[in-house]
Length: 113
Image 1 (cartoon, helix red, strand yellow):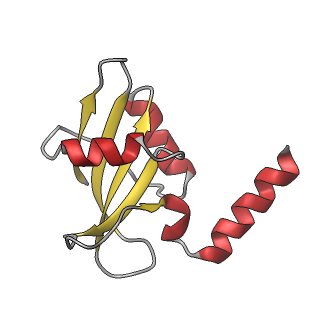
Image 2 (tube, rainbow, N blue to C red):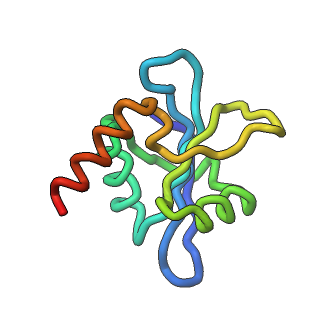
């Protein structure tokens, strides 16, 4: 089970924050997702490749800085190492698996259009 939580914004949408094991590498990551509701946020993460993602409880909701970061990002889904350093920046979810998988996802999106 992942540590995490959510915050409901004034417009009704939510920001979900989860601390997960990093796929294909040692360590943990903090993931932020902005969506219409909690279920859609978790579905977005599952569609991005994090299959076993569940949110039970609200023990570690996103901080105001994290909410600002995810709201100002065009994808609305970010991650960084946990525990993070002051100099570490938020990265888009495509950077989690490396450039090869990101390039393949972009090519599939272009073909679908």
